[in-house]
Length: 97
Image (cartoon, rainbow, N blue to C red; front, side):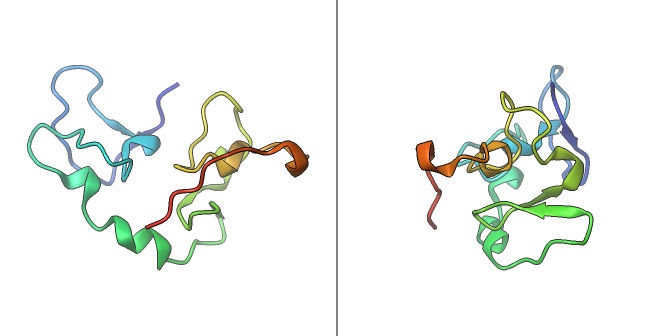
């Protein structure tokens, strides 16, 4: 499933027409008309999440409804929103800026 991020205008071509949360600040330019999806990514570490948002381990904020909604499609860039309760078997990567 694609979760459209509508606050960033980006020319993707015909399909798909919007950016998914996971395509923003992922190190890959996804917009045909510029690198808008990769600008200001350092601010992910400095922001504060709203009450209705979940703070990922890397500082990214996502809607609370995305937290543990589907283990196969993480919304945090570091996958921390879909990590299982048992952290003893966790072998995930963390993005360091």
